[in-house]
Image (cartoon, rainbow, N blue to C red):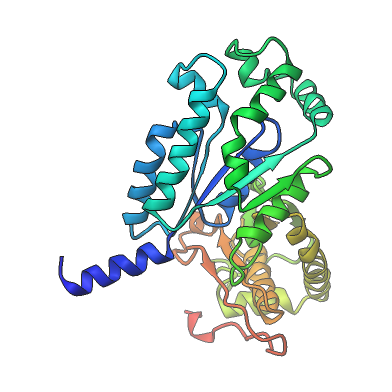
Amino acid sequence: MNAETQSDAGQREQRFQLVVVSGLSGSGKTVALHALEDAGFFCVDNLPSALVAPFARLARENPRVRRAAVAIDVRERSFTGREGAGGDAREDWSRLLEELDALIAPPHVLYLDCDEAVLVQRFKTSRRPHPLVAQGAAADLVAAIALERTWVMPFREHARSIIDTTQLTVHDLRRRVTALFGERDAQGVALHLSSFGFKYGIPPEADFVFDVRFLENPYFVKELRDLTGLDAAVARFVREQPLAERMLEHVLALVTEIMPAVENEARASLTVAIGCTGGHHRSVALVDELGRRLAARGLAPRIHHRDIARGGDTRQAPRVVPAAPAAAEPEEPDESRDP
């Protein structure tokens, strides 16, 4: 390895971040791991302790992985087959954390806690058995929770962050984890705008669906029939209709107003779909214009014209409209796209 490569490897190791998620069963580890994954972490759940250090080493050496997270808890007992009071597991976990400290900069241990009464209620609601009851290590749920507290103590003792989820909803927990590990320069929610044709079905991923089939259809104008909403002539035809402008204003106001609330829910994405009959003219023109106006308000929508290719237009590749300063004016359609 030459000096430059060694330097690059050293910088990568310094930038690499490992989060170890542990705590009580039912406290929300799966929710936390999903929030970490949405924040850009490469996540592995329920990895046996013997594989954690090799996994961390591989992740650290992979230039495509900057952040990794692994969940470790009493479920691994079914893999190791350990019996007894759990002393061996506690010793194994203590050694593992010491090994990770030596292998990498000390990992960020996130420990999730919860009151016994709330855990009991959560297990009753989910109708799932506690892992230690399922493994035969505890006779009932209350005994399993008490036993688990002693077994996972090494993680609590090494924890840099402890979150008590007793009073937290799923959304509250996602927000807490995102606040701890989310990257500040990333847009919190991926905003997707999609045009489509009702004749081919509504996009199943859509959160909001708007029907613009009430607008006059360029398909019935001979000069516009073979064009699409990406062409300036069609875009003008659609946008010059008073109802189209009012529709755009309403959708624009709705999206900009609800985005802060959607981000507060720690959701990963929001999809707004606008549909016409075939997904070639009206919906395409309006989605493109909506994307420009949202970008002018500081958002960076991702645009996808789902059904435009069914008419032979190859300009349907998904794209991101870069966010512009709030004062920027919407751009006019590109005249050069007219045939």
